Length: 306
Ligand code: 13P
Ligand code: SF4
Image (tube, rainbow, N blue to C red; front, side):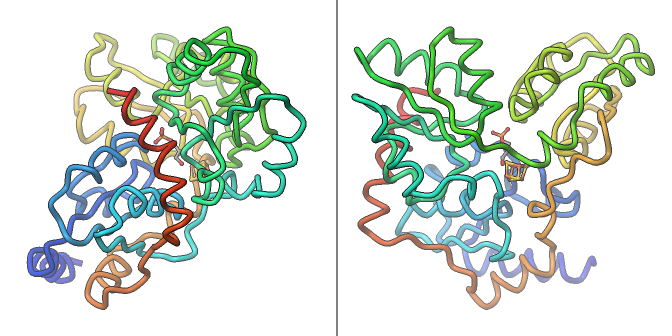
């Protein structure tokens, strides 16, 4: 392993490449990445990098977003089959049919959507800014029918926290929705009674209700750092635990369940990162027409989320 990491370090310098990784990646991928972040943090990093090549260790819509923001750079994804089942839960036709049901539709698209879907949307959001984006849309647009796609759980959460009524699409993340269950929270509370329970807003409403806080992966990292509590129970994809433990060696982190693993996030390996960078392969691109349209809702989001 050490020799491939040495070779990768030489190669990334030679090629002026940056390696970005989402928190849900494998520990060894965290260790070689220049930056490990949540969806919003990664989008912001993409805008400011001087690198010519971005190796995006995440799933397809993330690499696509990096390309939309930076079409002059080469964006490579280590495993071209790493997709997001939630993003695939809405098609352009389904979105257009849904929009046609409303007089004045205004679409808020979670960043977990394809470029084609973003191109038909009005503004994007991530799990860290969803509540603020919903409030912003409501306060700056009169008489609109707000549509939230594709995650019903994040949609319900943002609706509840903002008090803004929305028309929510019925998609979900299998990793959060199917594997993080309310009974696990009760069990975890009994086992670690003094621990705070943090869950991702992609979890079911009953899970969010039973937890202490719902927040994005990036906000979980900030929250635990500035908190006097030593013990935390974490309800999201288990990849985040590596980062939490590495950055906070004096605190204890327990997963609500070991089952909440995203198989697509785990497709990235060091060997694949090396291979795509060496051979400049698995380039992620979007046609100009779609890119120009998909850029606007992402830009709108970035302009109002600091
Ligand atoms: P965040 O990185 O915004 O917390 O989102 C989690 C996620 O599921 C990305 O696919
Ligand atoms: Fe998609 Fe869920 Fe995996 Fe995130 S964790 S990439 S939402 S399937």
